[in-house]
Structure formats: C-alpha cells, structure tokens
Length: 132
Image 1 (cartoon, rainbow, N blue to C red):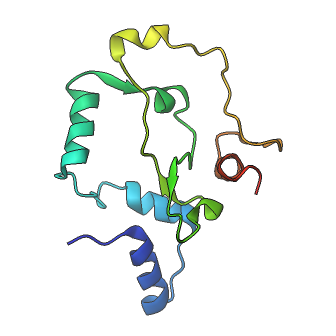
Image 2 (image 1 turned 90 degrees about the vertical axis):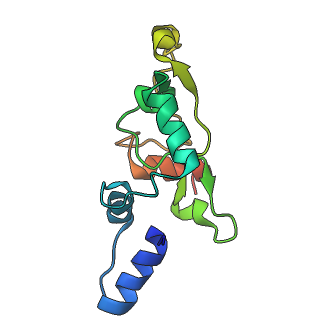
C-alpha cells in the first residue's frame, strides 16, 4: 500500500492535531523511512542510469543546495502556487562528459525579485510562479 505525504499530512492534522510545514513534508518524503516504492520500474530505471551507467543529473550537480526546484505540479489543485511538485525532466550526461558542461551562467534565475538565498524555497516559488 502507498500513502502520499500530502494525505499523511492531512491525516496528522485531523487525527492528532499536528501540522507539518512544507520543509517537514519534504523531509518525510525524502527520508529513507519513506522509501517511496524503490521497486517501481521508473525508480529502478533512474537508479540504474545514475549508478550503473555513470550518468549525472546536471542540475543537481551544479546546484546541490537548491531546494524546491520542481518541474511538474498538480494543476487541478493549483499546487504551483505553494510549490509542491516533483521533477519529471532531467538533463543527464555521462560522467565522462561532465567537465564539458557549460557552467558560465552560474546562477539560478529566480524571477525578478532579489533573494537573500537564491537556492532556497522562496526563490524557487518565485521562479515557478513568475513572482507570485
């Protein structure tokens, strides 16, 4: 059986009156205990690409501290405006070619407002909603 973090968050709120902020929800989703179906074919395929074939997720390599950088959101629930989503498109390169990736831009575009932390949640929300 599978239970989404969104549903678990709602249950925690309704049953035991515990509210989880977005960071806590992400921590739960990313924890080893969450173990989001590691036997699923898409998970196994991606894991094999990264580990066995020596591919590298270029975005994660260049911006390891970036938070909340999603490329897909639940449209019916309008989750873009709270920046709850997932990454569904990846730029993967062979590890041997990583030195040839152009890193000259060096920064993340985060909309038009300046941010204290361009890798943080607020910057990610501004980037995905064009500042709101």
